[in-house]
Amino acid sequence: MKPRQISRRTVLRGLGLLVPLPWLESMGNAAPATKAKRLAVFYVPNGVSLPPESSPAHKQWSWFPLGEGRNYEFTETLASLQPHRQRLTILGGLSHPRSREILGHAAGDTFLTGGDVSGEYRNSISFDQVAARHLGRATRHPSLVLSCDGGIGYKTRVSTLSFGPGGTPIPSESMPRQIFERYFQTGGTEAEAAARRRLGERQKVVDVVKGDSSDLKRQLGKNDKERLDEYLGVLSEIEDRIERAESWIGKPFKVGDIRKLNLDAKQINPEEYIRTMCDLIVLGFQTDTTRLVTYMVAREDGMGWGDQFPALALGIKDGHHNLSHDRSLGAFERWARYDQFLAKQFAYFLKRMTETQDEEGSLLDSTLVLYGSACSTTHNARNYPLILAGAERLGLRHGRYRVYGDGVPLANLFVAMLGALGVKTPQFADSTGATHDIFSA
Image 1 (cartoon, rainbow, N blue to C red):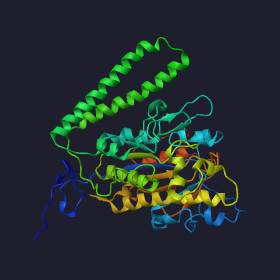
Image 2 (cartoon, rainbow, N blue to C red):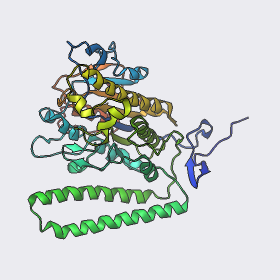
Image 3 (cartoon, helix red, strand yellow):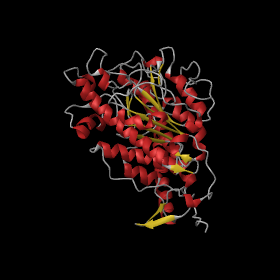
Image 4 (tube, helix red, strand yellow):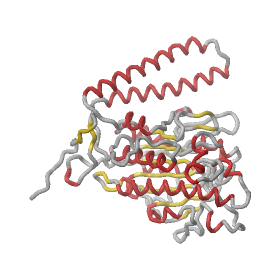
């Protein structure tokens, strides 16, 4: 007997909501393959523990592996990534030239932009948003911008990785339940009508604020006008999101698996919270709600919830920022144990992406995943610790620890990544070409 064909629009009814099913083999060819190309970026602040080679802790707790090429060895810090070794590449030596001489914490603002914030603050569009202009046309949301604290923070201590044209920061979101209800929750016509009403109310607020600002601007000095322009830039981004959300109301959601979601996860339980954010990213890709996600796991310089994560997760009696400055006995190990904790969360994400299937196979195989920081160690904005994972169907060749010299800017990698995503661009930021040696083409 032939197995029963199940429609991709099949849903489960419960608790007043329509809950979509995950992709099942019995759905057969009910929907065409999307051939989706995706990008996910994870950012951790304050650099990583790098005990000097003369230290007894070096071989056990250095973030970077021992040796190079294909025969490298993980230390205990990244040991949880061993099961994914053939699906990732460790990168060393890369950084943004315009950020190398500034205080490392400020370099977080430029992690995805390569912008210049060394004097007069001149940030620029982030490379994920360049990709969103191309990949975002096919999805309900062009990108999903997540962080530990939400909002945009402030210059040199942002709480977002994503920047629009002109370096306008894109507000991030941090509360799992709100993220789910805003981006994934489905319902009937009543829910759609309510969504339209909410969108209409938000639109009116944006219109009123922008209208009032015209009169106010004429009364302000130069510096205040610049601040107001930045604020209006954020409002424009919100306005664009509202218009896009309106255009998708009523269109059916692609199915996804929400069984693992804990929407009540809070930052006070870091592992549960970070894994819930990872689950939301997987859901975003699985449902093709978006193909681009940036996630700032925590902010720089002891700002916000993330600074408390070492204490909350591991009982380490110090904030993450202070750990990065501590040079007392055993300090490198304490710091590295938190690096190890973060690596385990990243390993969880890679496992979820590997196990989650769409019509083409594993989500990870068609997703470029970048993990890293804008410091190597305390305040040193060089030699960023970076991991590039997934996207084997997009041409990546993994299984190595690759070390570059200062002559190769990080933006070269971004140009190559954009190319793999189908966004052909000869230059991004201060790139001098494209880093193709980890790509098969």
